[in-house]
Image (cartoon, rainbow, N blue to C red; front, side, top):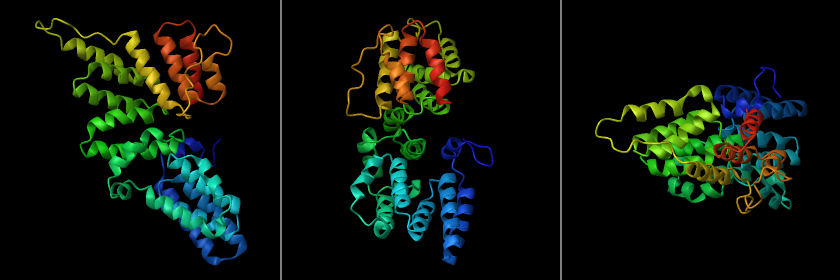
Length: 319
C-alpha cells in the first residue's frame, strides 16, 4: 500500500518526516480555526496525515485528537489513543479500560497524561527523573512489534549509549532488534562495540546476523578476516567461530525476545520439521515473522534440510 508520492506507509513510519508532519499539522490547525463543519473534517484529515508522516512530534497527536473531538468522532479518539499506546510499547488493549469514560470530554487529558509520563521527544524523555533506570526496568515487558515503537525506544537506548551506559545498551538493544531482525546497520553497530570490548564471539553473532539480514554488507566475512590478520607468531590458540550450540542459544534468546506474548511459553512445542504442524509455519500463519525467522535460522545453523529456503521465504515476507 502506498500513497500519492509512491512511498510505502512502513517506510514513512520508520523514517519520520518532521517537515511534512509540521506542514500537515499547520494546515489542520488552520482548518480547525474556522470552526465550519466541512473545514473541521478537512482538519481531521490533515491531522491524520501529520501523525502518519511524523509520529514523534507530540503536537501532531494533540491536533489529531482535538480534530476528532471537534467532529464528535468518539471512535476516532479511541483509535488515536490506542495507536499512541502502540507507539509507546504498551498494550493497545488498555483503551478497553476507557469504555465508561466520556472520551470526547476527557480524551485530550488522557492523551496529555500519556505524553507527560512517556514523552515522545527524546530530550523531554531524558529530562525525566531517572529515565534510564525506568527504561531498563520496563524494557523486557514492553511490546516493540510496532515499528514506530521500535524506532522510538531505539533512540532512547542511543541516549544511554551516548551517556556512557555501554553495557546496558549491549544488553538491551537485542531486545528491540529481535523484533526488527533485518536491521543490519544496528547489528553491525552492536558487533563493533563487542569487538572493541574484546568479545569476539558476541561480535561474530552480531556480524553474522547483519550478514544474514543483508548478505551484501559482508560484515561477518570482514570480521573473520580481521581476526585472522591479528594472529601472529605468539598466538597459540587462534579464534574460531562460535559452535553450533552457541549459535543456537543466541538465536533462541532472540526468538524469545521477539515473542509478543512474553508471559506464555510458546517454545515448548515440538520443533521437529518432519511432524505435522511445523511451528515455523504456525508462527508464519499467525504473523509472528521475527519468531519464525529466528527458529528458521537456528535450524539452518544446525544443518536441517530445507531451513535455508524457508529462511529466505520469511525474509521476503519481512522486507
